[in-house]
Length: 427
Image (tube, rainbow, N blue to C red; front, side, top):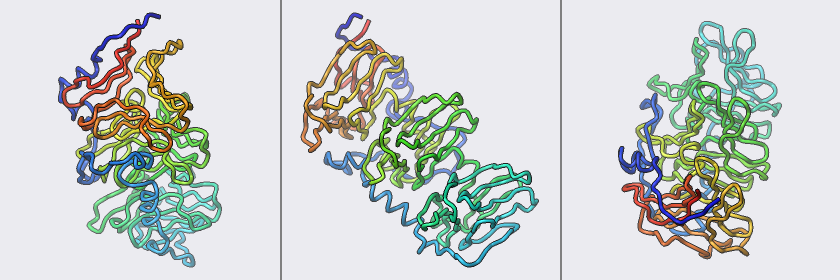
């Protein structure tokens, strides 16, 4: 294989820039969204919130601990005030905030065809008359678990140890919980407006929601599944079970994924250490949608998808994102790969083994690569000392792309201009 040095603007970047600049390059509109799906937000987080390398490890403007605190506050038994003595039984119609479901309790649709019931195995599940499952919280395996539609408006499933297993992320808004005649569980606010339903929940993560090992979301057409695996890897799989994207965070049993209230989507070790994140901070109200084409996207204000597994997570390192040792990006055709090796060396090479470029930083285990918000690509050692950088600071929202032609390029999203490149190519 011949290796030469040249710069080519990839057709996909050139075409998108021609259509609409930065908004088109790193964001697009997701169809079918309505005003109930989104909250007002500033979609340009800027650089003020991320000034030090240490904060990159936490994944954005708030730490993993902060985001976990948000989740725990919304699901705190003190705020939901579960009643562990009263059994609801089989209740037809809606229930008000402050209702508890123990094993065997159920909320039944007005037509009697469907019921939301708390099972003895810990799962909160929507069943039809034939006991076929229509939706569930995926919290089975914890006998003694119970559900609370708290006084704060949040629907929470608690384990037998009173620790939250799942929640609807409707704290401060929910007023009633009901099962509709069309097999949909709904939460409404005080005005009667639906703010959450089980149909949308199948394919979404809302702010403050996460996935524990074995939990998943499925695309509307049922062909793709976003799964938090037991080994710590967050994976999108197709109907054949093939992984089409992963967070490359395997080897971390007990890890979980969480969509922070700041809009950042991440995978964290059991102790809260950041393993991977989308870099989409500063977008409160954003949610994750698993689409029918297999793209799991972070959707912000106006239904604009600001990051996606298929569109950004394979070939690009977008603002705020980090590569830890053992993680990589690859070209769209899969023939060129940028990987951060465990010795701290950043290497661009072909699948046939030809090395195109390296950072020449071996001997630094624990190093990590950060695409900073100011446009500078920086390789740090484990003590946050700079090992190498692209010297492209002052270019907010610039991103890194691994191209089919073998070139590694940092682009300005506004103009499509190359700010830095290795100048390598394969023929």
